[in-house]
Length: 165
Image (cartoon, rainbow, N blue to C red; front, side, top):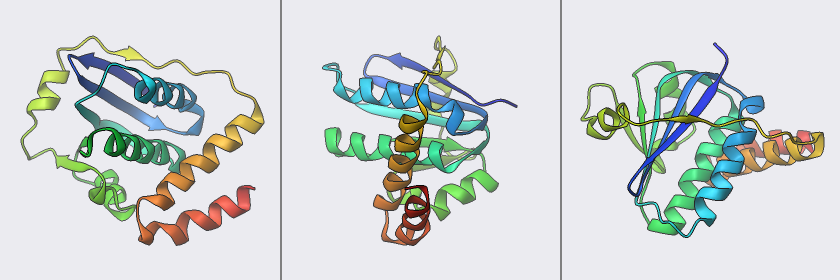
């Protein structure tokens, strides 16, 4: 299933839903959205990210999620919440140390924020046309974000970044 990223806002809570297989080619709209979200004078008190309908996220998508966590921590000193089903994707999130920078909620835990989000009017993030150099810059930054969230990640993503430059 082609990847889709949807967003909605209720008061000062931002909701982001990932659906299907989300790859770097699906992320240009997310990057623009993140830029706007953290430059907006309207503050965000919580960020809830729903990955329960995501099949797979590539490293660029993971890197953009890492950026959300980094920016949100700077702005609020809190961690965003990720909702994910138990399984391979939950395992990947832990393997890239997201449990250190996100509050990860699996399907058997309390999901009141997630239930609230099901009643919202989500808007799909449209892809933004970018040139090849901008795509490479975005991929490099996403990998840098993954390397920055944990010392354990440095050796995985620093080498990839060197290859891409």
